[in-house]
Image (cartoon, rainbow, N blue to C red; front, side, top):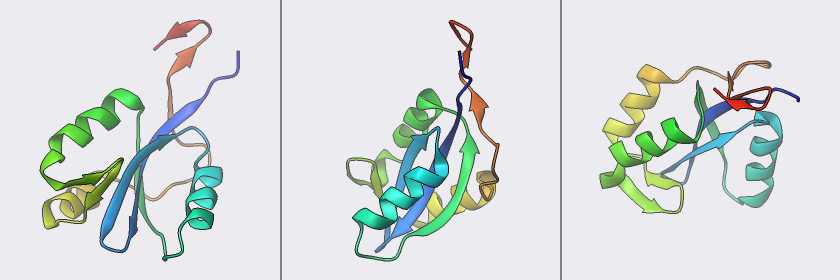
Length: 102
């Protein structure tokens, strides 16, 4: 079984931050840029998957706008600045090891 490495990504567009997960960062960013007429700024990533993403969504529920988009508040941007790093090829958290979820 192929191991997938997952990251939580943060992008900024029109005053909103998208908080999402992907195992193919380059493809996801390309798709976001193609689907949005506005400029997409890559803010960074955190290694992790759905559970961590959900906890971040919960932590910033007071900033929630719609779907996975949040208002770009000072506290959300400060969190991203403190916790996220620029994406580098090969990074991510392996969430599957053989047939077992890690």
